[in-house]
Figure 1 (cartoon, rainbow, N blue to C red):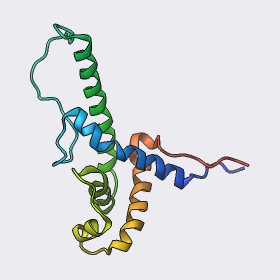
Figure 2 (tube, one colour):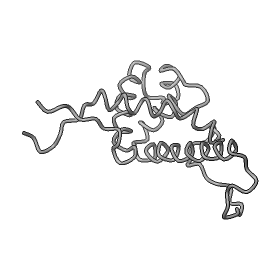
Figure 3 (cartoon, rainbow, N blue to C red):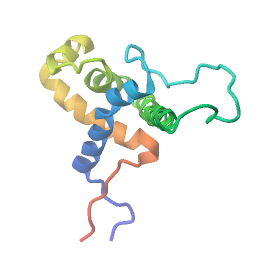
Figure 4 (cartoon, rainbow, N blue to C red):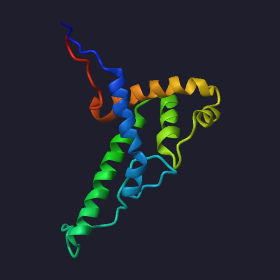
Length: 145
């Protein structure tokens, strides 16, 4: 019996991939531009203590969805800020631009890497991301036998 559980790397990477695939739709819902990657923020305008003044139930639901999308984006952005620079750019070009880039396009942007090495870099980056995201909540462990 081991004191430290063994990580199921493939399942954990799949979890990371699934979260990153939500980046574009979440950004659209939250109204965040994909041209610059930073934590979504409120506009700083003063607000009433009562959020439901004059809002229909549908408007309240849309506001809630926008808020929740912004919160999820914050988790993704914070994880991206805590991984290596090379991994950040690999995942950014794969999941956080308006259109996903091919391995060849990513290699061109990362300069010193070939398109064949991008697959390896992406696997490395996904591993860093699943560790950094929401205190490791994407990590899956292997079943004990």
